[in-house]
Image (cartoon, rainbow, N blue to C red):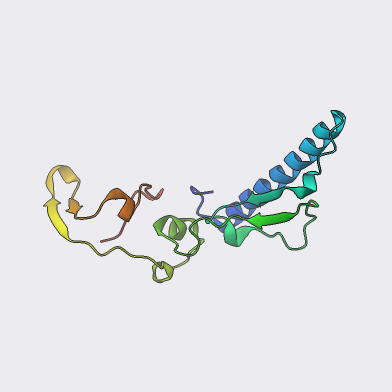
Amino acid sequence: AYGISEKDEMRRTADEDLDTTLKFLDMLDACLRSRGSDFDVSSLDVSVGSTASLSSHRIAGRTMPDAGRFEVHAGNYVFYDRQQQYTGACEEEGRIAAFVLTRVIGHYPDGGRNAIMVDAGATALTKDSAPQGCVCSV
């Protein structure tokens, strides 16, 4: 879901994610029953999704398994980031809830890379780059 930027494709991916999970639960139930197990699959806590697909899941109105709990796993949904802006889960940069304030301690315009060095670690910024190729806007 993290490489998708079209809403319709994200909805299809979210639906496929949910469908795959439901099929797996049916297969697990059938397998357990065929082996004489009385384990109740509906007692499982089931999570699907991601921040990228959170707003695309259409669980309401669908036939859900008799699971004890069925949830959409939101990931970093409460903060959003550039990745979520790219996927369309967060439609504007102003909705990104967390920013990092740091000092620029070096500028390297050589070799066409036009890079800067900042006084912040990878975890403070991100360990993932967004598919559009940048981690942050300057």
